[in-house]
Image 1 (spheres, rainbow, N blue to C red):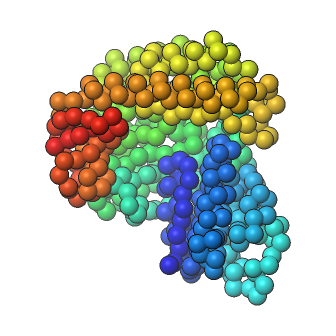
Image 2: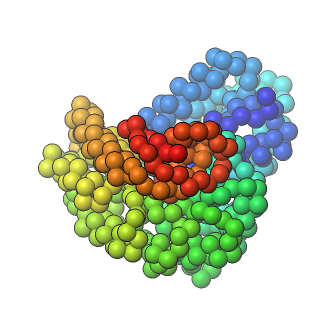
Image 3: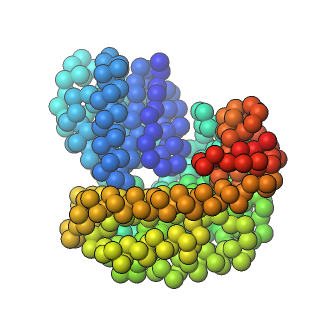
Length: 424
């Protein structure tokens, strides 16, 4: 074994894991496992710790390196684990020099017995002002390619720890993004997914402050061979005119958006320090559907945010129908130490779980309705394995006949099994 990377969390982490693997191998590391963590919830941190313990039990002689958002925000938590040999910060993990230094660190006599503090290599993420392009050739085992265009966030939602793991907003220059997409297409990828922490803040620190919509148009113009372009989660309040126009006119821009909604009640949204109101979210979905009638939306909603009453929660439930959400991600509220929301009056844990269940049930009903409506439709499916794929709308598909991964096929939806469309 050379370098294995275990990835938790978002698509941006998936992209960065490829850079980590390349840099660690280039630095001469071998027989190491890197755990690229997520910090979005306490449960994500718990799962990372559980995985680390399991990996060490299974491979007692393997070096374990922790990085990612949880490694950045809680370095001492992981350094104190006897299973962990090194903790690298979120900026450090992208630097080949940090991996060379890690190899030297492991080569020293007695490195197994370092103190927790000596294991930590975590810089001040708030001091990082640029995000460099990292040319990635491919993504092991994935049919679609992720392209980092932005990192960090300038906003401070009261529940969110991620800015402290990622730093302030910074963007990759447009020319570098286009070059990365062109490289991936040349390597056989038919779909690219633009990723970032706060994607719609793209360009805020670049000369001329280009917006996300302009970047999308430039990619589609200068990489005509790219068959499908997709966006990861966006904040609808920041969507610019060029982006809306691109959805209206560019067939290669997939008609699917995942929205960072978080709640459906205005007072809760204000206490979250979000920048939109309920009516804004509904109006945005209506506007995009007028421009692109086949648009499909997903959304993140938090259940049981501090001070949330039953009436407030019911507005989040209703938002699923009012925005016409198909792909719902439900997060039971998880207090993150150091955030303002952690100091607010909490909702009882059993109520949080019950509300999360009701939201998931609501999402399941909406998704089932979407699957029913797709039966009989013709869809272009990107194959992800020999028998699975996704439509333009990111709907999962099971194929009746095996095919090669990474192809785009014109198929007819013949049925569904409650979780996947069945297509031939």
